[in-house]
Image (cartoon, rainbow, N blue to C red):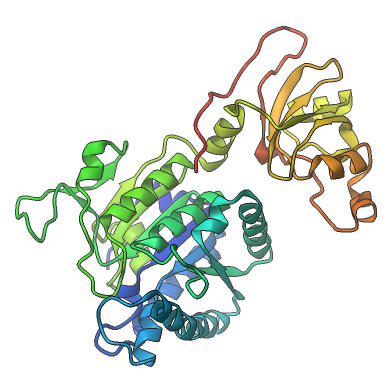
Length: 397
């Protein structure tokens, strides 16, 4: 086999990769069991990415498809309570398969169950993001699935495509791969229109692109091209490249990287950090403000994070995850950022060392009041009168 890896491939260059696997790939439609021989090659691909220093998150469908056969449920649409029962049974089998294959290679696997609500409500979003960051920092490979056993409206058409995009956004991923039973985007449904043309690259998701979406041909999966386009809109707005590709071949990720399979790439206009900072800079009404001393000001202008020791005053009511203004001692807005503490906790730890936080608050929070990845400088020379903004944009999700 002659590898044809593209040196500038988004997958090759990505620091953090999210891979979503569809039910039709994981579950054999005849037996209702895990397609283990295929799954082994997927795991080999994920380990290959990790060995070269890339962080990997896996979003996996398949729990309902696995559980329904075990419970003897007939083919066709399931009632909500049947879907939840099937998910409860199938999730155990799915998690066990990943644990067995990954831990055999000395990789710790972590199961994370989320709903779309977890990625859209601020507090739950921040908690989920912190958990993912900790798992990745500790070398674990998170395996994420929708928490179907407690979901209500979340069990619906194509939920894991959108969930994967939200996870990519939440984790600040550079690349999202959607592996399913379709090989990419066509101008029309190729099963119905012999003149349908394949689209290799999408730079802008226009109404015409959205109109090209069709439905899934799979009896096992619930996603279709419509949900993949919705996922692409979420991903690219967060600065993440997204790829749609058929995953039924062995080593599906390697085939994408080595340009051995047909796939459609959706291209973002920036990177995940830039997208987040555009959103922060474009916040119309910051929840409050904090004032910093001259030493902290110099640190921020040098690209460093804001520590509690450099904060001298807090104003307004805000919660962890809110956007606040950062003011110089003269009261000039120098930056905006997503703060890691509420106004009450910020008032208790300002001016103190990070090592004192646990003793002051009773829990170990973040060392930074605002991490540099969540902070954007909007005025580089506070005494010159020149304001430089990092382009206002809509929130990436």
